[in-house]
Image 1 (tube, rainbow over the protein chains, first blue to last red):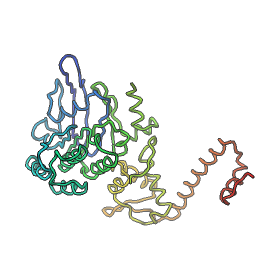
Image 2: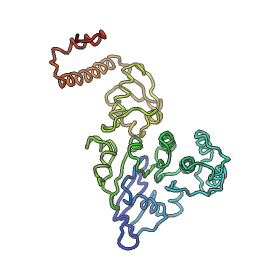
Image 3: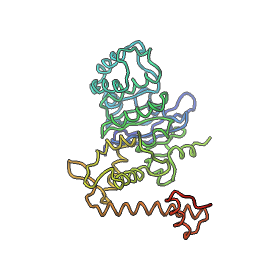
Image 4: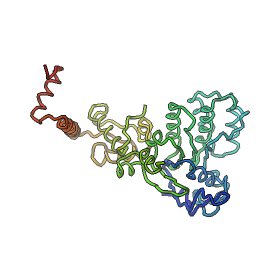
Length: 233
Length: 125
């Protein structure tokens, strides 16, 4: 198994004494779909932003496919942030060209096909689309890259249950067998069946790293039920 | 439409049960080729690695076998399928008897209840 993501001693301290991440160690291999779970403020988005080089760590190291963060890691990672990040006045087909310019591993035909399946008008401007449709466009752009590590921050948060099913199918049918998909979400029950592994983050530390079936075999309960127990307020 | 899976038991076990059910019920015939792991995983709405694990377990049981490069096939051993059918039936019966006991029925009363239910009649009145 190749170590696709290797994180050691990762710490992020925001102003004052707020530790968003505190000495986090994590290694992910290729070929898995991994759920990054934790209550609000547990450090999920901070972790994702650090891996994508959007924030600087206070301490610790991150290697992506053996490389430190930089142009190589950005080539290897397809990142879907949890907010709208595209220029709202652009048309969908312009965005495809835009992505093709940015990323060597962007597969435009794949994107066309997915947009067609989803019934999204390629001439529409982003600002004319609903919130859910915008999220679908962003997901299509992200999943159309032949990346090694897909990092999806809340990909199903804003869409209806039917679209959620489609998005999960899109993820399942579009990641290559040696790629890894890291998904952060609160909608655990919706996503549980497609995950290999789940990570629980609590106050900036990893408190659980185990496969879904290990949890079910050992605890006799779903990941969703375990989450509610571990993070009971 | 994803397969109907319950949330407390390991997923791979439920996938195995579903495929066993499909073999016993004749959805797949002896010697039939199974869809690829990826296609089955998509159909079920589950992770391909989990489907792979279910397949490996079924292979270990001898119910399916892999042929190099050409995919996975249902066993041609019809006795094995009959045996599986019997086992599945027995599991259902054991669970049923347990439920009847909890309702307060004696084991000797059960056959009569079954006969009546099968006739579509009612045991009382």
